[in-house]
Amino acid sequence: MQNAAITALGLNWRYLAFDVHPDNLRAAIDGAKAMKFIGLNLTVPHKLPALRMVDELDESAGSWGAVNTIRFEARDAEGEWRPLAHFAEGVPGAIRARGFNTDAEAVSRALREDLGLQQLRDTQVLLLGAGGAGRVTALKLASEGVAKLFLANRTARKAEEIAAEIRARFPDQDVTVGYPADKMDLVINTTSLGLKPEDPPPFDSREFSLSQARLVFDMIYRPAETPLLKAARASGCRAANGLGMLLYQGALALETWAGMSAPVDLMRRALEREIYGR
Image (cartoon, rainbow, N blue to C red; front, top):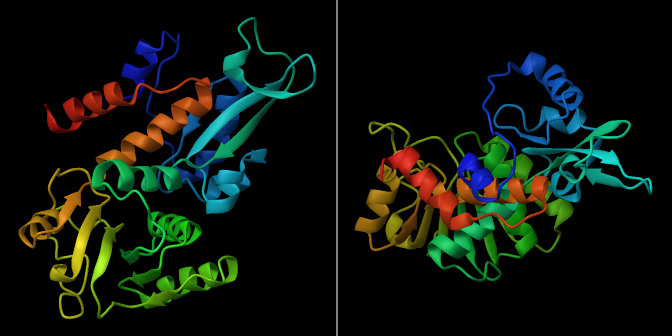
């Protein structure tokens, strides 16, 4: 996805994957800074520890409490911090690491583009899972002013912690830990249940039925159709997997580094070829 876009934009860059143990994350970030990398993406379990390891937090990372994108910056002749991509003639002076979060915006964009949900405000949502992705998604939904937000998780304590954070940051948000009795506009799965065909549903079928849902979004993108999505479509729901979220967080990261619009359609085709062979 990223290398296809980098080539299309005519950038003399290369996007590479590195397996970094959590104990070595700070050293990896410092090493990338020393080698004048343009930037980094971080995935689980690095997104939360990185908050303490970057030199500056963008508002996006500060708001959502996680870093999935780092941009390296240096001061220009006027003393302003600029992305390293802006220094064609060599990087002057010291470099800093600035942390961003593109996951939250990618969630709302995927819901708009892939499910046609143009307005999150006044939407009733059931969110499944209270891990890192669940927390960021819950906070983003609260910031959008959804009508009602239900948080369901195998360990209720983790859901209660997210609910408490939402109540503190968004006092007007209606948030409940547990399952709704009424119909839901949207169900979002942020758990890993569905990666394997034998996985149970990510919700308690004694407490909730997909017949109560209108739209279903599963963050899992491989397989393309999880048991949840198959059941959702059988129940008459409009459904989408997490490929769009993966795409949009990557496109936003590229735009953060390059200061150029990402070729999203090309990136989607590259993802579909790589993941689904089509």
